[in-house]
Image (tube, rainbow, N blue to C red):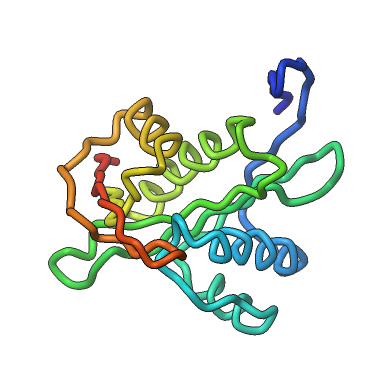
Length: 176
């Protein structure tokens, strides 16, 4: 789908397709994932993925979607979808999103979240829950609220940032 975008005051079109990941995407996926881990301000993970551990990690998910820039044939973002819990809470899923830094601000995250909502429902989940959205991640929080996610409050100092200080986290949910 061709998307007309404005970025840094310039208008342009980018052909972005969201699809299920393929093994050929793994190197780019690992690179994007590790970029977010390295920043230390959004993901709880502290360990980097190698190609081998990344392959295992992504295969373990219920679904992994990738945003492909069809004009340049490269991966510009991804998401993982998996159960948030087990048993009597197994109908609730969880997801994480990562967009390569050079593509941030271009609404790719929104496309990933919308696809994730569809894939979660198709996988049989009835609720998508985010456990730990860092309060300072204003762009993500605005997006989730725009897409009608419901905020559940604030957990004070629930996330340890890379520099060691603690930030509040805000759980969210969306009925699928």
